[in-house]
Image (cartoon, rainbow, N blue to C red; front, top):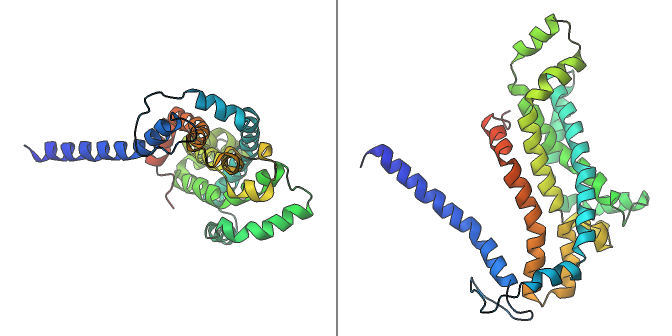
Length: 274
């Protein structure tokens, strides 16, 4: 066997192993959701009589329709705004490089080191003073700010990798700074923007801590936050809890599968350089 074939075989085995390890939790969750309510299934045992109605029961028990709309509205409130701000800031810091840009970027980098648990208490009092507790804005506004350090870092790295010759040619043709951004760099940044959008969507959808601390009403939380209330009510019913968890996972899994090509392209283009 040649060395090349050995490398191919080893790569295939490793990929298969990673694939199986990744799917096992989902398979276990799915089989658990099909067991009779009130039982405590273990492992990957397939029930003799699958209880498909558990998914219907979980949907109605948690009022998944209202929670899905709430989570979607929070994602729509967070992701577009965060992307616009991060793209503009990334273009300024990575391409225009204004005076003081390094200091501003250092502030964003410092923000990457702050754990959410460390700011949740002052954040609670800030939101309370603005009379936004128990509203969706209590989740949307903090998340936009909390995402900025990573999002700006991501977009700045992309614009740093863009060749200056593009801008010089556009400048010679009389392009203004806005035209340079809108007509030249923004179309080229599409893979990086898409990948960032996927990440922010998944993180917002799965946001748990902010949702349970700042919002009391489960119907105004994210899907993951609403699961906290669902668990408190149905924590002893493991199959029903597993069915509810699958409802939370499925939309983000579909989003990632649809846009996975853009995500891979952004990574291959070196969006995280710099």
